[in-house]
Length: 196
Image (cartoon, rainbow, N blue to C red; front, side, top):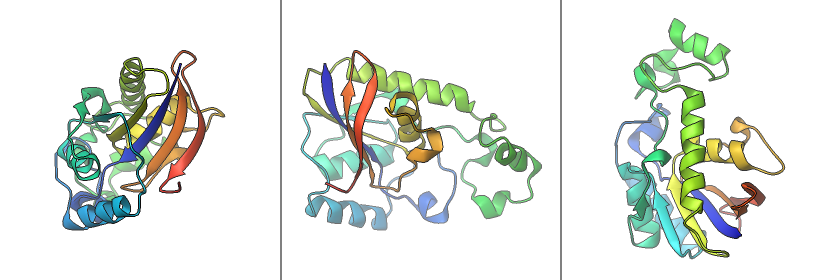
């Protein structure tokens, strides 16, 4: 059984404009984020879908509403990583922080102080995606509107040929589309959006 999937990163927020780590912070889209999404929608960047799934955070639900006219079906497991003590801060604000330097040196594979373990986050994201795909019928089209880290975790888990986590970075309002073999748990024919 194969489903047609599009993973879309939410539109920009004020925190994104600042280059801050925004995980658990539930901030809405900023005016620029809304404008860019609407322009891409007008350009037919986003394909029609049968189902819409979103993270519970407002930036994802607002993105779904702008693009598809619905907030979609919320899945808790699609939340972004909790950045703990780094939440809401950008590189400049964290530069010189020894905990931040340890995290950088470990290539993001150690827990944030007071935050989520990256391995647990990746596992949670992959499991949430796996579970929502089990609800889809053969050939059904689904948009999953979530976060940059969530997209990276999903494609790190299921991409074929495999590419690692950091390969799948994407900008706000962008993402990837692919065919997902639900039985084999393989994402194939992965293409970036907004290239259609």
